[in-house]
Length: 89
Image (cartoon, rainbow, N blue to C red; front, side, top):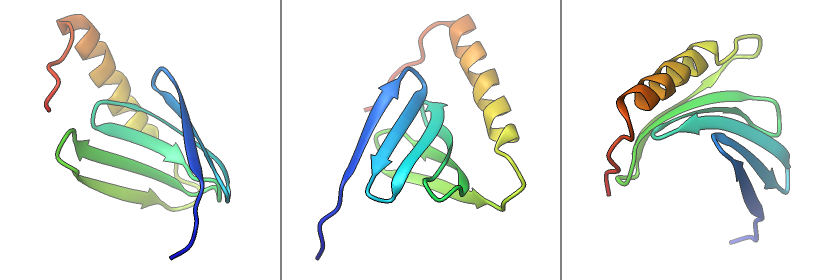
């Protein structure tokens, strides 16, 4: 088993990830997150908070995460309009 290093810093919905392979970033809230890995690969992730269950898909180069960002934006606006969402623990 080898050693590894990973550290993340949150700035609201933006998360900057520092690892041995470089710096990546992601944006999201709740169970939705989309981002770019240090090697430039893009991904989107949907999880059920508190369960450890989820689905992740990597996007081919040249395609963005625009659909995931648009969905996240709509969910964020909806949550702000309706008030705080309950936290599942």
